[in-house]
Image (cartoon, rainbow, N blue to C red; front, side, top):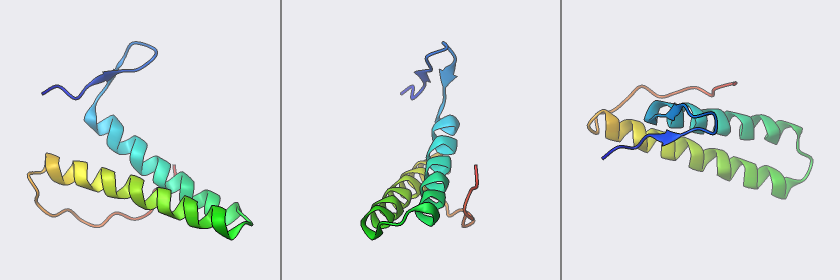
Length: 77
């Protein structure tokens, strides 16, 4: 099964691009939490970061055959 998708500029969007995208989105959400004043917004951003991280980790686990991987620190970009 081919998981590649085309980007708007015509390049291929591969599985590792998805992983980077999800990890970067999680990091961006965590960064926005620090800037947010509203507790509800902070809660929602943390939940979104958690979901992005979990999806990326699940994809990575699938790619490595379910073998454990080293815990990742927060990505800043």
